Length: 131
Image (cartoon, rainbow, N blue to C red; front, side, top):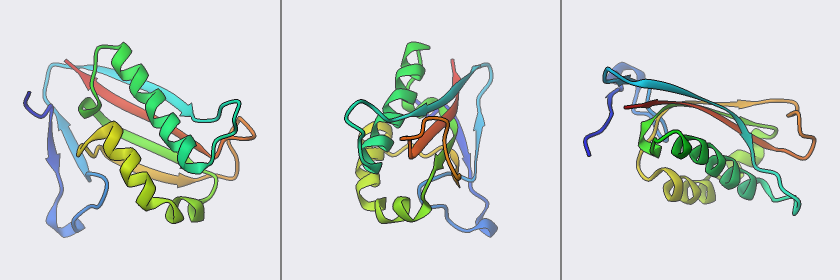
């Protein structure tokens, strides 16, 4: 299967790590907007567990719409602690690879004061372009 996107990483912006500066979707395509997904459950998972579950839930929506991980064009990750995110990067890399392989969409990572669910520390929303 060919890559559904052309990656745009202008050299003057520097090499991205863990994201792409931009993606161009080939036409035609259907746009899927995935609502923010959290990763909390009855066991009250830790930060890495919440990231894993939230990303998995995003992919459940994409798959239900007939898509695949590599068709995600952009993603925003909201965290309640940037420090916790930075401390978890090595483990999060493994979680990412398990769910997304080597596909890196255009991304933003945003620290927020709180999420709607009081025990949530991660929320992920995404946009996918499906054939």
